Picture 1 (cartoon, rainbow, N blue to C red):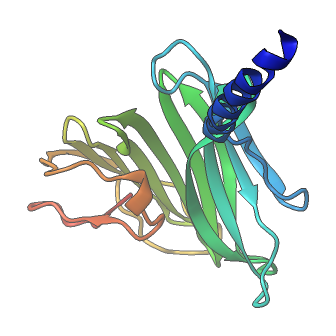
Picture 2: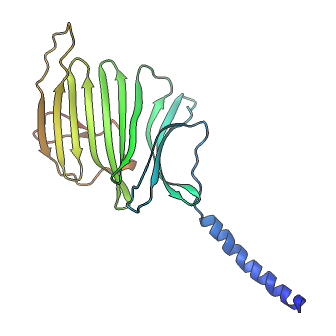
Length: 226
């Protein structure tokens, strides 16, 4: 009797092997980066309103042959098997040796189901630009819903642009810094102007180039950056 059942056992085993292989192939791949990458920032929180935390991380890659490195944002889901990559975005390609110029990540956090990224760029001289970008996952995409850009010039002041892409509210302000001793540079007065602008579509994280985005509103003399 045992010999009569042996072929049937082998037949069932052959049927189960492809199913097992398929199950393993569908398992989420673990997320990892090379150990030589430098972690710049990380944050955890619920990004898709499912009650579970996701994890966002920013890494600097190794320099390439031209001595440039990439700064990459990774957004991962947390699974039983570990982190699983959800999406990624190259934030910038930067020179490895560029002092005194620099571009820094000042803060990364998840707040009220949004990803908040703060960066600072110092091109040299008296100028310093501070960016805040707020992203939300909706309609199967990562969209920019808010931004704040401060163009700071030492001994002059700051032009600040704030945009709510969802409502179309735009605020442009100027805050003088009081000038510097020994310099007689006239400064504009403190001001705040509000505008309305209807966006035909929200900017996508995938297509956003930091520091390269401009908005021109009829009746507004200033160029608005985001």
